[in-house]
Length: 315
Image 1 (tube, rainbow, N blue to C red):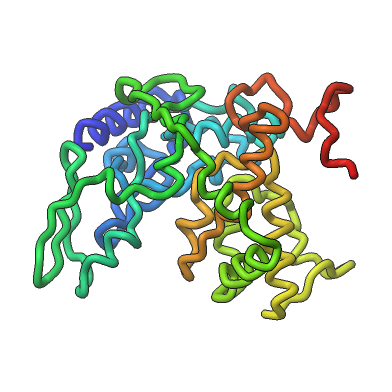
Image 2: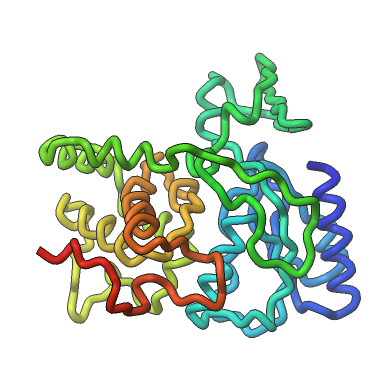
């Protein structure tokens, strides 16, 4: 990862020195181990703080919405697909972006790693798909592939789909026999079991809206949960209001969600938020042969009409 960091710093420093961009959106080292955090670099000196590692999980497309500056952005595969979404939805113009593409071999799940230790993690490093983790009382060497985020294990678009320059050679895309085994498992449940599954899923939700705030697709000027005239959903912890928030947010992302996992990454209660959107991702693929964010010149499935569209959902 050090070579990627060096390349990103070199590219971004040059872009700022030459005045090709006004700012760079990337990642810098966090204040604790495994906490790489989004940052904005406006000077070449600040660009030297940029990093890249397996903790750069949040989706940086979230920081581009409605910006007018000339922006450089460091983008892995899922970031680039959401940038395409933003271009299609007129939230950013391609001419105002300089995309530094980063081929990605997956991000690590911090929660899985922390669960192995009784003490706080004091040191984290990685090399050649090996993770080296230390606490005050023990050290472990882990295989990165065993600790990938769930969405990374099913990702088939690890290379950026659009970019101005690549920071490394493209990686081999994963070939997955059944990308939606998790969804099929839920589809095969009885109605009662599905009801119990989703009720149990959201029982710890505190309505903090971190999932919404981290999602690059949630950019409405006023979210439906914040609307007061009319009030679409209650503001408290009534279970019906919690259900309404999660279900409507998921449907707002239908045909647009790239399964980047930013929602789950941001959730402080470790809720498997992707369970709500995964079904819609699967349906988009199977019903409309549509995957979002692959082509800035194609309109989303739910944004177009074709007389040959399948209508099996009409009962």
